[in-house]
Length: 116
Image (cartoon, rainbow, N blue to C red; front, side, top):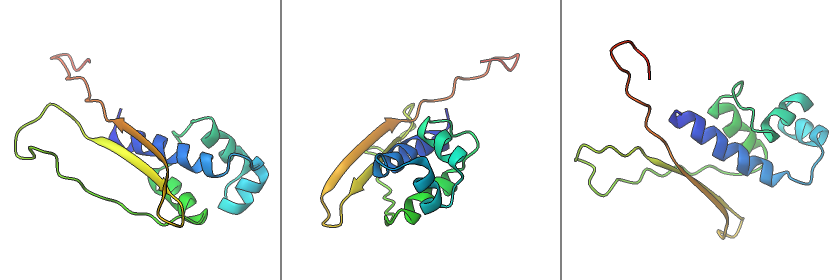
């Protein structure tokens, strides 16, 4: 699983949470998506969507984006850990509403035959 896939999943989950009570047609009109695309996003079928497209939907929904890069505790050591991606939704007063985090799993190493 790649970093972009984890990011798309977390962003889509928060986007869906902001429009949970809306019909698919209303979401589509508001975000400039077809009803079919809204259905795919709500079901987590994100293969046809880029992270950029989902980010544009979040902005269209009325949210600002803030991206923070946080240095790992020992950033110069060679680590076997992959990063954790966290998406936080904040209300207009700066209060945290929701937080979703997921560690990006490492890809399995390929063996001599290219499998794995």
